[in-house]
Amino acid sequence: MPQFVVRYGALRQLGVFSTSRNESYDRGSAVVVRTKRGLEIGDLLCEATERAVQDLTDSTGGQILRGMRTDDRRELSRIRNQERKVWEFAVQKVQELEVPMKPVDVEYVFGGERILVYYLAENRVDFRELVKQLASEFQTRIEMRQIGVRDEAKLLADYGDCGKPVCCNTHLSEMPPVSMKMAKLQKATLDPTKISGRCGRLKCCLRYEYETYEEMQRELPPIGAEIVTHKGRAKVLAQEILAGQLLVQMEDMRRVLLSSDEILSVIKAGTAN
Image 1 (spheres, rainbow, N blue to C red):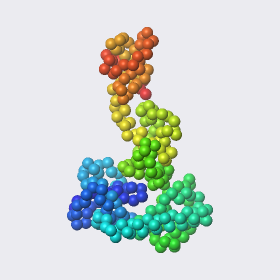
Image 2 (cartoon, rainbow, N blue to C red; image 1 turned 30 degrees about the horizontal axis):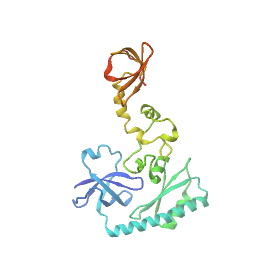
Image 3 (spheres, rainbow, N blue to C red; image 1 turned 120 degrees about the horizontal axis):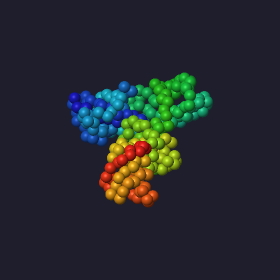
Image 4 (cartoon, helix red, strand yellow; image 1 turned 30 degrees about the vertical axis):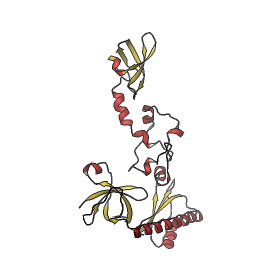
């Protein structure tokens, strides 16, 4: 049976899904799928080739039942309206019951099998009474999902500082670890307000070119190295990684910007960044 990569759910999970009757679908098709949570609407991204799935981690899948039909679109509209009612009811009950948590979003699974309530909390929360009242009101299974601030941005954020939709809500399937070391190597500003994303953490895009910067940096003598150039001996003061240049101090104390191809040899390695 043909297999496809499908994105589904509020947290935009990725999974490998098989067809039920050997059907073929176009990229970008909206499809009705069966997952372990029930019936859901998904976006078909591509065929599940070996290359396409090699980077997927924990990719639970299921079955593609059909392409999305007119009656499915009407049902999805009804579900979205119901989600607003669930959200308003949940927020009201959290306040009434004084539950120490912050509701972030609700997801009503397309088939009606369950409602997921996403929330933030600093500690463990006793939400048994809240779940009881939600289940009684909406007559379906209630699941509470504690999330972090990055997942909150994934659920609610729209555009980043770059003017494009946030990465976590478009193409990223998981949140990569990001560190200040990556920002320093790329000579990004270290002002936290400028290198932090909508979640308040370091921007995921700082990781995208980090490995390229590391590879290019290895081709340059490290800061502190003593080198021989066409103009004489010098000491490396700084690296301009993308330009492939070095700021050096010559023996006569002049500071000069040199291209990497002007270096004849390294006579003392110095220390890497």
